[in-house]
Amino acid sequence: MKNILMYTSSFCPYCAIAERLLSEKGFDVIEKIVDKFIDQLEAQLEEKKVTIELNKEAKFLLSEKGFDPVFGARPLARVIQEKIKKPLADKILFGELVNGGHIKITVKNDVFIFDVTEYEKAKEKIV
Image (cartoon, rainbow, N blue to C red; front, side):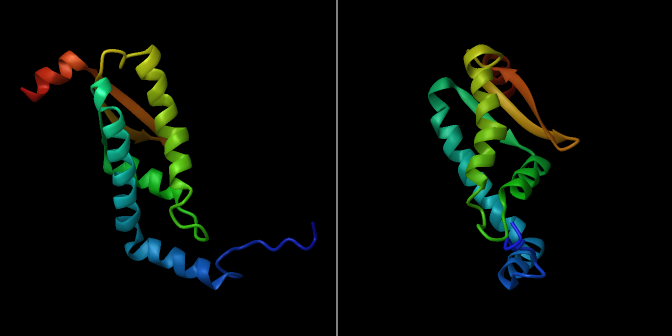
């Protein structure tokens, strides 16, 4: 255990660069990657008549949890799987989205909140 070196920005110059990029303009890049993952998920759910909307705070929290200074945005897929897809699957299979609908994902106290509008009500809002 004594030979393990912690990779922080003080020991790893690449980590410092990655952290700086994320703080300067990286969120915009990571946000686009989040959008790409969510668009793919929404395309998969099209058959189930489920649409997804994330507010800025939800995208930021996913970006923050899914970004690693060493691995970049690679952990983002796992974070989206755990924090978005799994709860969404439960809602589709056993809950409010059995017949489809619209889900708005927000954040409160660093926890994702799923606000579901059932399919018929979602259709009425669109018309």
